[in-house]
Length: 349
Image (cartoon, rainbow, N blue to C red; front, side):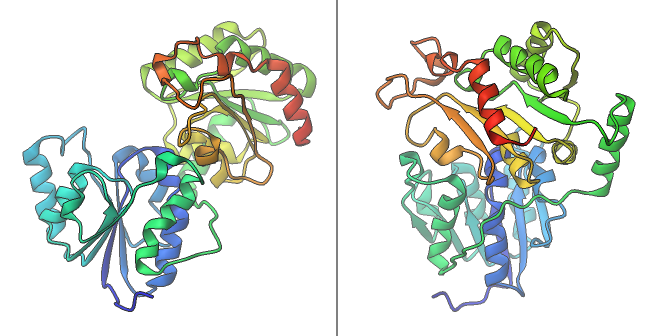
């Protein structure tokens, strides 16, 4: 077991929303192992809300790789600023050339990561087997901690809500006439790739049936990118009943506070699935891709009541993602009635 004490530890995760949330159990395990260390987390701007206010962290550092730090000069300046903080260990959970270079330039004495993408700049590296998809991403994050002898039985996702977000959501629901007596179901019809998106008309049919059968209020959410906005526009177009459509208007904290108010979250394979798990709102997730490393074994929701609907349509374990030659049959094979039946089995509405 690792015996050395580190005064300042830098944790690095610069990929997407769900990835950062799924790293939060590892953050707690590191804090428990190094209770007296100063622990900082380096993330991108749009995932800052996941870890800001995390009681297991002392500091959150934002790296804007698509903004002020995009250029080589911007990254060098960032590295110089980071160097002044004098970290003595970095744990890089997502291997990128840029992060490995920056960690090296900052002269952090111990740099732990995966044997991939300029990993020769690390002091310790392990084989990256995530693509095999034999376990969940949350659990893969603990593989890298084995280097330090860190193990943990408790692996609950953690996303603390700030008071500003709670107040914002309370006022937002009030503006739409939703009271504490209303039952809310939230739908996320978008995703980062076409290979993850259940047909919009089926989402709409499901939403209409949920209103008819259970008398719930439907709130649809989306990100700000064009694909997500197109998906929520299509949902509104196909729905016959009245819903509330929030187009890219929520930050991570506000989304989490809204999900906390819901009885159920229905979503494609996307980051908000893990936000919902973190605030303990049950999830029904729709998965299409069946390739190891892309499916629900690695990326599915982790809540005790959560359900995944996922079908193998004979693609032979190779998913072409947005270049699918079968018109996303894996998703088209899921009917609205099938999803409605699964919701009934969950017994939460």
